[in-house]
Each structure stands twice: as C-alpha cells, then as structure tokens.
Length: 94
Image 1 (cartoon, rainbow, N blue to C red):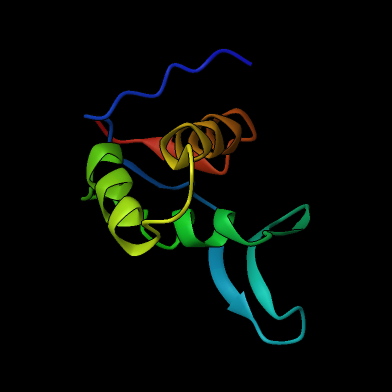
Image 2: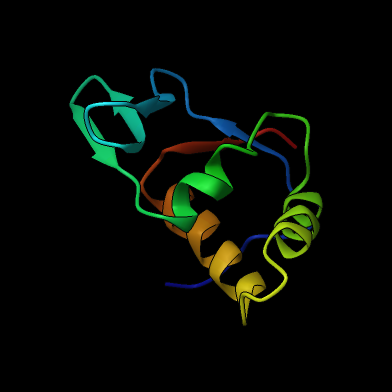
C-alpha cells in the first residue's frame, strides 16, 4: 500500500460511518451501513483524535507525546491513516 498521507492533511470520519467506544466489544469500533469494524489497540487511539480540525501532523505529535516509549510510532500512525482512507473510513477535508 502506497502512503500518500501528508502531515498537513485533515480528515474526518466518513459520511455514514460512526466511530465510538463499544462496551460489549471492549474496544473502539467503526459502524457503517454494511456492518462494524472492531479496532484494536492503537487504531482506536489514532481515530479518536480524528475530528475534522486536527492535522495528521498534530495527531502524530500528540501520540508521540502520549506514548513516548512506542518505537517507530509515526510510521504506524501514517500506515493506519493510509489503511483507513483506503477502506473509506475517513474522508479528506483539505
């Protein structure tokens, strides 16, 4: 998968999708008309910061600060954005 995510990009959860904590699953999920995706670990931490205002770069900085011991976290974050865009869970606003 080619990474086209830029630090200046701003994303929001895609239309007709909802991101939420699901108590029964004990994880964050994305709900959409065709079903649900259970997000594991860091994926939920990344997507809960996607608000349609914050840039990818700001999310990277926030997560690096929140999880200072996580190695290579920036590549993981950008990879998650790339996956989420590819799956149409996110829409680019700028």
